[in-house]
Length: 530
Image (cartoon, rainbow, N blue to C red):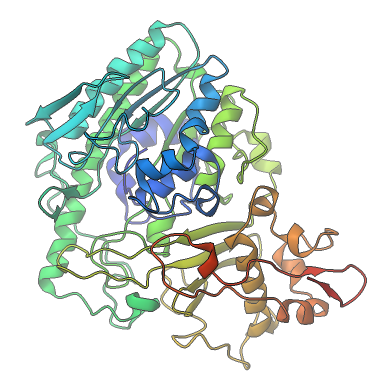
């Protein structure tokens, strides 16, 4: 799991080993999503199989997130390594764990639970690329590595940890989490320093000039819509950030190669599942934004996922929609560990049979609380109206994005014709146009369906996250958006409550998030049930 790696800005172009050794030997998922575009809540989502609104870890630091919040809400005894370790399978971790895990509280109130062995990066040195500090298992010893690039330290530690895991002769799960290509955070925010062996290699690369890169016309909503065009110096910042990131990603590609070659050396490569992903995506100049994340746009939420292993389809690209909520269930399935009743996600299809017969996740939930911090080049600015709820709806007929911001603004994109999210179909005033038809129906009818789905997903739990239609239609007479567009349901959807916010809060406060219940359709009549 890398940190802040994009999918849509061509970062995978500098990863020939990942392409050859993982993608060509397995499945590449081009519609995989993080449900929170921010480090800590995304990692907790990955490790628990539960949406952020159900873990209540919704930020990177207290009171709404971080290592201390993770412990406070009881997740340290109820997450992936605990469930794996309880079955006798070894668990190992190298790299970045959770924000706020620091030199002063890495063992307070307890160590991260259930890892057979571990070496975690610790704050305030997590993002100090040439002076990282690391824990040593369940000891209270911290070791620092001045003058050595953090990715090189991670690779050395990961190979040694792999040797240790294999030497036990037992089944094991191992997670390697380099901090790259995250920005360096020392006395400020800077592009990640490039490892010595990759300096200068990508200096001629510039941030992709996509349609939504520093566009002439404004796009997005909330504070994004008001963000001014980038000037020449800010574009230089974007390009510098981009090639620095590529140098760091190329170094991670070598790490993947080394780990896979070590597995092959031990003769267990073909009996090992390998999962490659990141915690969230990244934007660089898109929608006029300086390098960063935390936004609901595709650059920030659509992220890399590749899987190879026994029984996995080979050299296949899948457009089945899935998210980090599905990762813990997928890993337990791979290891033969029973799934849990409290999962909001479900195992991702990866065999040929599953990929050909799987019922696609039609709806992916995306959510965010908190400000967007000051981007590189804009000192002192924080954008506090950056809380939103969003959904991606994808099936054979539709490829849609819909969101409601805490400001009340809404965005609606037909991603099949506007993948760059430049034309908000509701406009800046979020007005439904009565003269516009959409897939043969008035635009208002499509928007009413989006509102209802967003209402379900904002508080979904377990089955309702996997199948929100079952909440709206308990009798299962509607199971996808196409069926829901039938005109006989127009009155039902028009009467549904909508997502609203009392405040643009910095964390999940249910009391400030408007109505939580939807109406359910009563089969055989137009009546709705509260």
